[in-house]
Length: 262
Length: 310
Image (cartoon, rainbow over all chains, first blue to last red; front, top):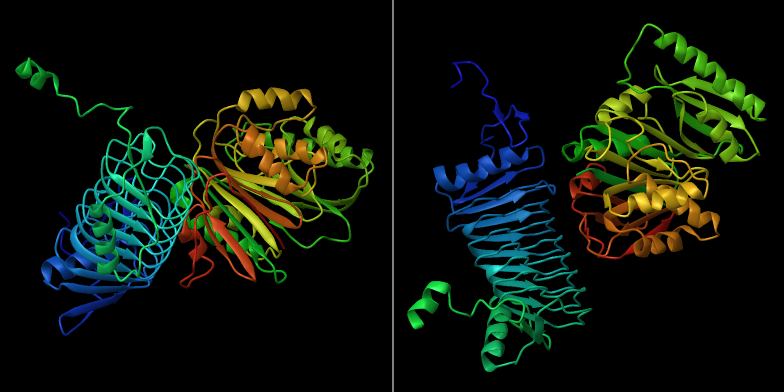
């Protein structure tokens, strides 16, 4: 613990000193809504200010201006609230969140919303690669295009992309759904275990064990409902892709269960 | 990890040294070991500019170090004159790095080989407008050391290096000059898995390598292709087929800047393009370092080659 009058220094993951590790307390609060300008703040200061407002002040509607494509902003928010980023985020934005409703009026870099548990994230611009990696729940809407390997290792939730998607989209996907309205790069759904991918444009190639699926009324209802919720207009005509379940046979009984059956 | 960056203005000369420093410094976290620039200034009446080093900043300073540097420096100028170069200007940039301007119409390969035959001498670049500056430390350090803030020009590429497979020294730092072609340079982020195969093949064709770094293959590979008559874009397209591994690289000539991404799109690149300028970098935060406003960027896709003219 720092002595009185002594500046406390904390360290980031690489051991680099961050001398300004206190919440800057620059937010203006009006009618229960908070706004602060992140232009001159470090990543750590932005996140500390966010957390101070959400957890200490109990404010549930926060706007962050000028995030400046800085990395790792808005991570680990585990409460129901509304956050608006007026600008773009860098890598790892809004990862590990559980509950918030986030509006990003800009672009996001690689690995946005990684491991998101629940909530809603709407990105008005493009997103980089690995968008929604290991997504576990909630809805992630990207109104632009996304890079490669979106929804890699996805375990739940829904990813909606209004533009194109890159290679190996849905790689090793395990659960959840993706609605990709544009064209998709090579290796779609490669090595997927389960889940559903809907594609509106052309698919360059399917990955191993990704096969066309049979369209049902449930699919229509699901897609229409999601488009309606987010005001995305009428959905395009979509193809459905699922796991062929040749590569992995995890529908088989576990060894312990097999013993019981036998 | 490493970080790469490029900028090409379409509306004349700008402070590209300052711009590139800001971009590279903002990506210091991607590689603190060394920083390098390939800057394209205004051609100077057809004169060639050569940047070369005679030691590294971490070369042991033995008792004969200073005397050796002076002796080798003298031999460089001697050999330039002997090869027919008409030396117009010579500047010692640091204790061990030099910049020399000269008129020369002969064979660049022959000239380079003569210089590099001198112990510890390494030609970083020769060009009409290209100047490669690289050294250990971050961008602010290298910029201050070589006074790059006022370097004016139309386009530039840069690199911050996290050394993984070769030494922390100037030879291992990017950019790489496409020896022996004037005004061609490359920066790279990734790994090439058929490095040794291509190195042996290119060495048999008479090319030399300054380092043990796999990235140097790309520069020499492009040089080989261009020697066979390919333009920059087609040479870069060929590289997607013939170079294995994961990579994003930026290649640059006296009037063009191009980027290539491998088929897996495993290495990042963010791109901003307007009528006046094209800026690209491993992270958007580097683009924001020179364009401090909301901009519309995107990631090029797998297997893409994009080339812009200045």
